[in-house]
Length: 376
Image 1: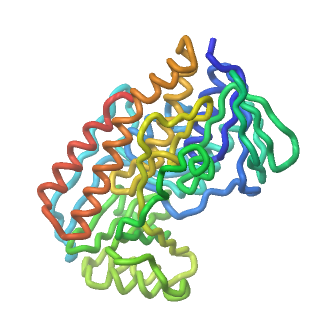
Image 2: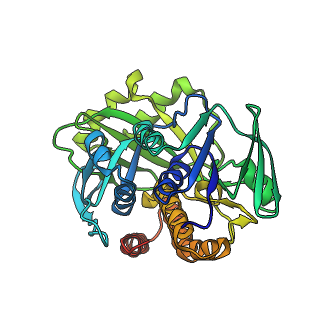
């Protein structure tokens, strides 16, 4: 029997939903509150790696991902002129036969996990968050914005990179800091010959595409920018089109006009990361996902490490003799893996911004990919 009977999850993002679904499998009663009344993840496409697909398989939604997204193995590398210079293999992950990676629209992945959360009999309340959390002995009392008060054995905070729960329980931790690189994303029609991710490397700007469905792909463009973006959003399509103009590969040239269409839904994100020193709990309140371990996208692992943390927390709660044992087991399995992803992703970002050592970049990618294939 699990060491807790009733748990509150704050935040209906990927890590919170993963934790809720897996805790229900362990027989734990779960309430989940999500502040967004529409429970709608923002963003364009998202790239995931094989380990993330393995995590989705563990939860039970890999089949839906494969049906509604796109899976493949390997990444092709090109020069700006279209000369293929190599590929990044995506090795088989331990304990699973899932493909090496995939892509999907971020809102679509959110819907898949939300459907699975509700199907798991999690008690979901949207448009709701908490106003107070107070621990009393072996219970936590929580007051909510929609009126009632609840009592729980454990609170799991998964309220994102701008978490107010982190601000309260970890006041010494500074908010995430802009890293000096931004990423543009756009949704475009997929040419039939693009069947797996491609990246064009050359200088400080990197361009990539990844299929997200049988009909569409998403493009990502990373660029160094000394300060955060302060440009009228109406100019974004032309700005992104001009960024890829120096890339003369005919494949990119054919995609470029589609950037100017409203359907491209161009999105910009300034990149930042965050790694809170462990332990990630204060008493019976534990933080997971982007609240304590937020990464840049250079290893396609941001969503993955959060989903994995939800799975591992549920596993440790199900098998531990005491709550402290569960916390200890969770941190032992999650700290080093999350640290590696965040710090290696940041180093890859720095190398790209500085047009640095390509051999070091390749080595970090290779070592990180191999480490992530190992069991969680």
